[in-house]
Every structure is written in C-alpha cells, then in structure tokens.
Length: 198
Image (cartoon, rainbow, N blue to C red; front, side):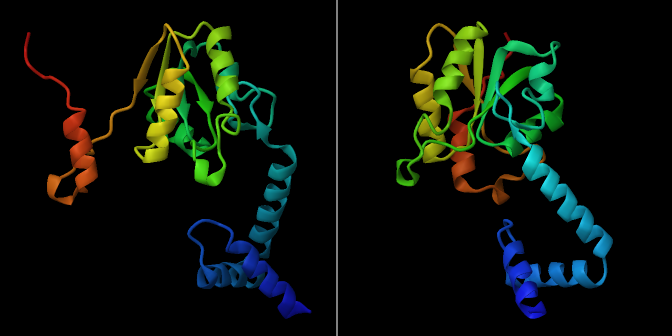
C-alpha cells in the first residue's frame, strides 16, 4: 500500500515542467522523509490555490479576486494594453518596472494543429475591451514563432484606428554575437533601428 502511494506521488510530481522520474523521486523522498512540514505547506498552498485562484474578468491573469491588482490600479494607463501569451510573460514584463499600462493574457497562441482558435484565446474579449476602454495602443508581446506571428497578425487585422506595435527581438544586452542563434541575429537585423544624428 505504501509503495503504491509513493509511486503515485512520484508520478504526480512528473507533471511539473522539467521534472523527470529521477528528479520527482528525489523530491518525493526528500519531502516525505526530511521535510514533512514543507510538504504539508505545499499541499495546503496548492489546495488553496486550486480552490481560490481564477482568471481576472478583465485581463485573464490569475488572481483570487474578480479583478487582478493591475486592473484595479487606477494609476495604470488603461489606454495602452500589452498582449501576452501567458501569466509568466506578464510577470517577466512587470519585473522590469518599465511598463505602466495594462495587460491581456491570451493563455496561448493560435494553433490550428492544437485546435486553439481566437475564441480559446479570448480574442473577442480583447477586441471588446479595446473598444470599451478607448484603447489607443496595443503592444503585442508575443513569441517569435510561426504561431506567435500568426496570432500577432490576426489581432492586428482585427483592430482599427489604434496604434499596434510589437516588441522587438534581438541581441540581449551584453550578449556576444558568436553565442547568439542565427534566427535571433536575423530578426535583430530586420528590426534594426536608426541611430543617425538629426
């Protein structure tokens, strides 16, 4: 009985991204043998999160309230919306402290092969939000992939009379060209900016 529960626990941990069987086994044994208090905290937090976290009714970010703290913040510029693919993308942009607008989280990108269409990504809600909030600019912070590009083009083609921009992709600050992949280099050359003095 115990070994069955242990095996079940190990298998459950393998659902986490980047966690294989050996890592899951190490984590399970550590939690059960060396840190039962930590294991109980994880179990309690996970249970609370599953029961109380939902999508923000305005931007689709994960939150415990109807609106997330960003949508509730009246100091944020509601006329500029940054469209991202996932909550982790939103958190990455927020960590820079450089964006003062609001967000919309697609929770994916258009992918006919995975049966992910505009409705699955909440794009009709995004278009409605753009009209309702008199949005003047949307920034498409989507991945530089075929699906990301298709999603960006689809959104751009369905908005009118507002500025649509896309974050640029290129060489990281401090990065050396010899260590950067060829697709990134090609993209950064295409999306170069002029630095001539006027």
